[in-house]
Length: 403
Image 1 (cartoon, rainbow, N blue to C red):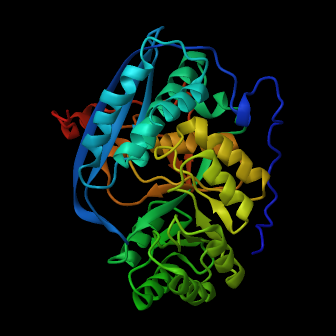
Image 2 (image 1 turned 30 degrees about the vertical axis):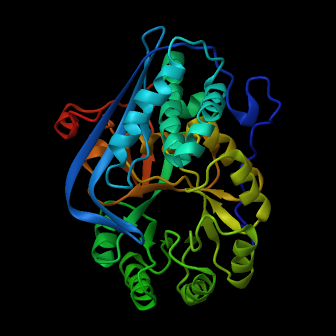
């Protein structure tokens, strides 16, 4: 596998006195006075289709924390699957995490992440639910970073050490197999300049859709493909070789996340396509193994699925330092999307922000004023923290009784 030849910007030194472990900025200690969680569900006409299931509506779980000075922070918990997942994760925040968090001084968000991860480890093993617990913790972590950046009067991406204009290049994701050319055309008309198509629905349909999407957006336009773990080793190799002449910029999750590193290495050695993965990994050790294996060129942690800012920012820095491309994974509501955008703006590199092009009232509706979208990029503002809050119209999607 040939690494990307893109020249990446130098990362801040790890021993900078203004930063903590993993390049995170040092923060003042904080207390949390209250934590609230709200479930939202927005109906949609067309379900979002993946290789493993359908999303028949668009859910979101928002976490709101209030610090000792009254400053508010917002976070989002990944909750797309299963269909009942949003309510369940909200209850995890309420019943498991909140008693561990309130009225205690925390030295910083990274310490909080480590403490909650340790405190819930055995519960995750006992219930078989380490994933949902990690997702709930990630949402809390995002909210705390938002609160701290607001308290400091800085946009989150600057608070994390980012420089420049806050311009975040994007790609249109979630292009489904049933109407791929039409979705790609709409995304192109909306201003997107890079795209990602879902595959894993049969060889002929997958290849035909890639050709059709490339015809719509332009042969030289970046188009990635995402298999959502649909294939085994032989099928992944056969599809990678069939896709290669069509020139996708990366092949995402061609194998299941639990496949050993040598399976990924064999696939990487047998195809010239850059491989992408990371959305379904949890823990620093898992990402360290991913980077050490050398088979994956595009690293995609999901800020609302594991780690929040505290976990994903160090992963992004390590990926860039290793010559990989950092492109945060995201498919959810507006708060998590903007947390991903701030992370990418802070980390640097030549990565792209994933923006689902399917209809989702909880994207702009939960994040007002939503940043401007210009020439294929989100333009982050200079407002403190994430710079947004749920709009009044979002209330009609709030679930009244979620435990």
